[in-house]
Amino acid sequence: QVQENAMAAEEAGWVATEESKTKGDSVVSQAILLTIIAVVAAVLLGIVLGVVISRSITKPLSLVVGLATGLSAGDLAREMTDETKDTVRLRKDEIGDIGKSFDRLINYMQAMAGTADYVAEGDLTVSVEPKSEKDELGLAFVKMVAGLRKAVGDVAQSAVNLGAASAQLATAA
Image 1: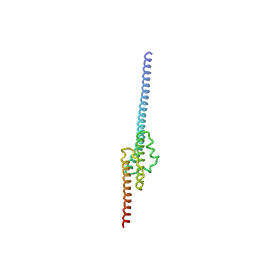
Image 2: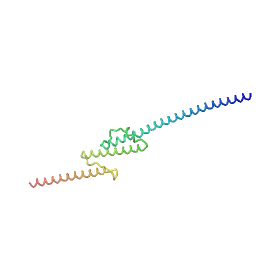
Image 3: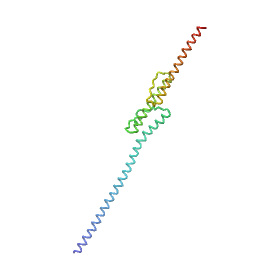
Image 4: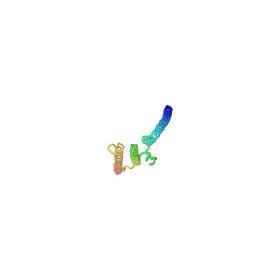
């Protein structure tokens, strides 16, 4: 009977070992499955974040590139809505800083174009104040208006002199 008990104990041990191995295999399989799911989820999240971040950078930058291209061709972006401009200039990062700088540039160029229109219409009373000592366009406008004022003054003085000479010739004749 001792031998039977020993064999029964051995058999129970083998059964317990087999059950333990089965449970261990199940736990390992579940761990591998969870790891695979976590890795796939992390990769998908990385892709989604990459696309979102990429678009949040490329969309406003493409708008700025379009503005720069237009400015280089003389387009002062008068038809662009403030809502469109705000998609760039209201950002709190470097892209927003670029947008604000472009906004100031466009406003400056529009003001200079307005001044040029006044001068073209013969209004030499316009006042141009360069933004800095490096403001080549503003300094050129100051010189141009001063030169035009002098030229108009010279023509007016010549007309006065011609009128006086004509009057003298008329009285002499």
